[in-house]
Image 1 (cartoon, rainbow, N blue to C red):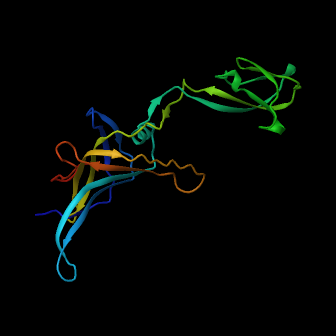
Image 2: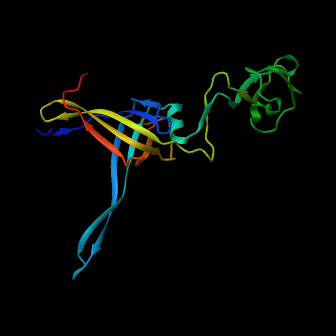
Image 3: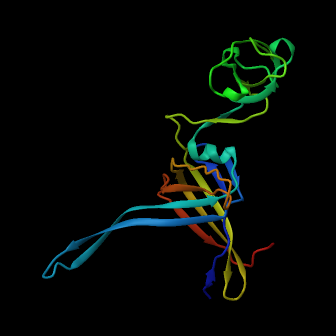
Length: 245
């Protein structure tokens, strides 16, 4: 007897590097996973009224679309093809009070002394004050004890950061994607349901939203479905027997 079923559960996804056949990302935190099969039909016409007589199908393809609010650098790497490293620098901003002799002490050694810029607190990003730098110690010319200053400088984050570098030549890899969820039948059974997308290539589009209100930001990943060397594109699998918890 044929199972009639419905779905209200997302797929857990495993991305396998298409070239090396090694697992790249386990994604068990998506909210939406949608597979779509696409194609194009053209017709031969003939006779009075220009009716359609013969159909031709082609342009077979599809997409796998995933929505997630949980994110990782591994996910960013999958989407962009960028390289992950630890080497990174970022501009720090510190509001400090001048001590005797015009001295202020930074929280870290600047990555580049030329990156140090000092401003009076009431002239932030205005006219830079003259200063000398030695390690964390900055001496501000003409500043008196008790003066408030703002210091900008490049800070080395390499010992505690991850960086993904996205270049103009960075493009996503192809992956084989394994999806796993459950379907619920009219008889109240939960049946394991799986799919295999044999060659999925993430589109090079990524939007990372930052907002101080509303729902947490969602990232949408859209993968184009291609065929592999065996002309395989997508398998849909329904297992017999109720799913285990």
